Length: 404
Image (cartoon, rainbow, N blue to C red; front, side, top):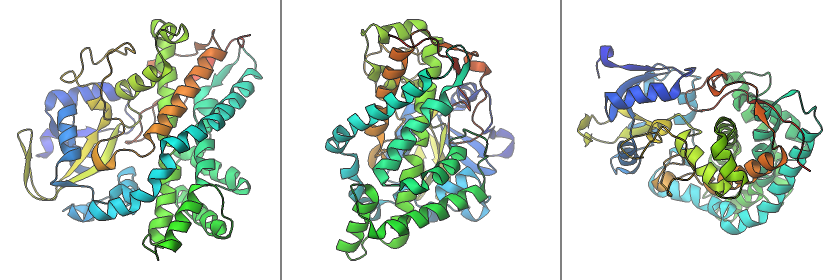
């Protein structure tokens, strides 16, 4: 891992998939620098799968030999220092994750479907009230508010705090005027902490109540710090990546009319568009970190104990060694697996909810506005300025008249 052979990952790149193609050409594990951090990047599907599942690769920060060199306030810093189940392993991970499985069960999702459809219909009505021939930013006005409202209800955010909370989460999702920053993240955490404290005496049908009950029943098996960190993780992770999923699907479907016609004609289900978007344009670009617990060899590369590995989800989704015509968006593909939600014990708990929201949102949008057109070419849209997320900051369209 010499400096002259190291790729510099640019969070503001305008060509993420081009960058990833060059990374894959350099090898399955490539030395990179990301936000000032020296790491290995797992670039192809098989290698990423190996990193995600290898018993000698861990998410626990104490295994990182150079953790003291981590620059503060970066996206990597926020992720790797998180104290929720995100970075737990073994029994602690199972203890933190178990209380949440019921919240994302099929039964709970079946109960949520009518509410998601209702929220989607309300957003469609609002879009239809806007001038049909004026540009509308669908990331701001549609892809973002739907998952934000759903996760707020699922967690149990009181209505009195939702405006303030949404103002702060706007910046994290990169919509609106605020910019994400360490100070904003602190303000968000303080607000969530206040909300959690207020909810102690007001039980309801939501995750905050479920977690408080577990905390009391099990004699603190879920500590106060773990409880707060879990709720904060669920709020942020529970909607921001879904915003990217819906935005990315809208962008590609508007640029691929033949694919869109397959959906509108009923020849392909909208779930196929969701899965192909997850593969072809993963909502997550790069995700930190796995650490080698001891010296280990993966795909012919020797990792020293304590070295970090960055997961390249967007790159793995276009790995030509895994997918035929990997660079082509094709919703008629035979069902294929992808790693957009991770794999193994850390597989995303919210994956079924994200899939459901994506399917409902896309079907409603493209049914309601059959003449919708993009305002700009896909490559002209400004990318997110973040190492983690893969999407665009704005998705302007001309909606056209609503279907009758």
